[in-house]
Length: 111
Figure (cartoon, one colour):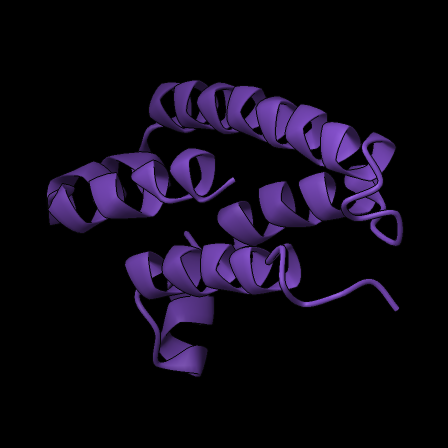
């Protein structure tokens, strides 16, 4: 799961301020990024569904976690949210994926 979750936040660490400005100001850039994120979230949902079906994580709701991930990724782009939280977009994504990783750790137990 971590192999799927962490490349995105790592790539964001290398993104320039111009990249994030473009996401804010250019509707076409935002649309492309959102389509990419939607594809990644669909892949995450499939992985979560597989984990649930296999019995590794019977207590998770793949739909909820996948949609939550997508919405947080959109919220994290907002400058007002970054300013209020004192967190960069990279920190938001890193925190989100660390939270998912902790939730889905194989050794955390189910119950």
